[in-house]
Length: 399
Ligand SMILES: Cc1cc2nc3c(=O)[nH]c(=O)nc-3n(C[C@H](O)[C@H](O)[C@H](O)COP(=O)(O)OP(=O)(O)OC[C@H]3O[C@@H](n4cnc5c(N)ncnc54)[C@H](O)[C@@H]3O)c2cc1C
Image (cartoon, rainbow, N blue to C red; front, side, top):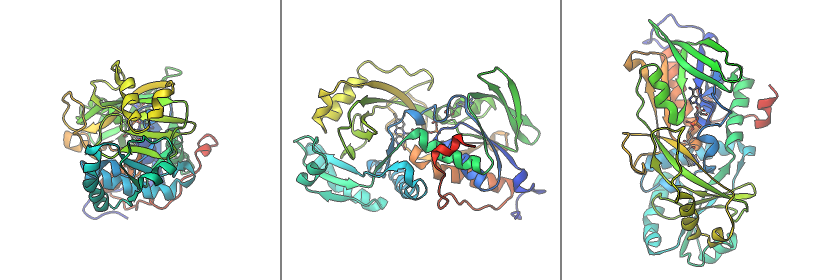
């Protein structure tokens, strides 16, 4: 039903076409929300699903505990979405909880602020005795002084995106991979679609749309620039190291402010050690500093010394799409929250960027941007993604 103070005439919802650029966690969740509300959705991804930052991340279904002291907004977003994902993606997650551990005086002194932060953010945190923690995680350092159990979990990034996209496809969306947006079509009324190049065939095609959503994570500044728009995204890289043995059952964090090498995530038969943080100019050209992989090993070994006795299998880097001002540094001061940028203010109505955030907050990021699309289109269509269960990831390939 039209909203009275918005422009008319208004198209029927099912005829409104939206192009979503990017099939990482953000684009996948946006496609799902749009399709569920009745839009005609086309997703354009220049590589494979989750081929950007999402496919290279730490796989941590954050409870938000990591951010309770320095970034309480992000902490609250994480716990709210963590609880929703447990409902809608139940079969796709490993719900193994996390342990925040103190291994020295500094961490122990941090505990009261940490517990107060968890309470304020609404995170269910339970202090365990050191012997209980060691029983749960026998590889913990003998230096451990305190442990708090929090509702973390683990996701598999590719499947995370496929669950959203499989559901979007079931609701009519189309997904094109290996297809790059090279231009945003603009007319008197703003964005009118995109020009794409199919990377496998070289074919160039125009896809018309009423709205174009830029969900390209650390590339969102570059994609916005195609339309002469600005997005203050700061690609902030981090190194991950994988060891070919699952040394922890739960997620293990250092009980302190977020820093380098303070998380260990079990992922299938491996454990992922990470991460570091530094601002990069180009998310496509990240030079991993020579000492970062060894630093991850040395720092995570303070929580689990066994890390040092297992030769690592791989190290890689990806860039977080953080929002802020682009000065070179470590980017730790930038919030992990997200933002919608309506490029109508820059003369391109119908073109919107959604960026920042985390994989765990993809659903609420989608809710916000699709609410904005609905408001601009003058349609009322409630967001239902909090309740509607997602399809199994395998169904992506059956459509
Ligand atoms: C080291 C590291 C660890 C992290 N760990 C976690 C974690 O444990 N848990 C968590 O929740 N979050 C984590 N994050 C954050 C999370 O990974 C990101 O916030 C999230 O993946 C961003 O998703 P996105 O879809 O916005 O961007 P991306 O995943 O980068 O997706 C953007 C997509 O756009 C595509 N694209 C770019 N340009 C074009 C174009 N012109 N045409 C078509 N397609 C294009 C890219 O190929 C890419 O696939 C981590 C980040 C980093 C860097």
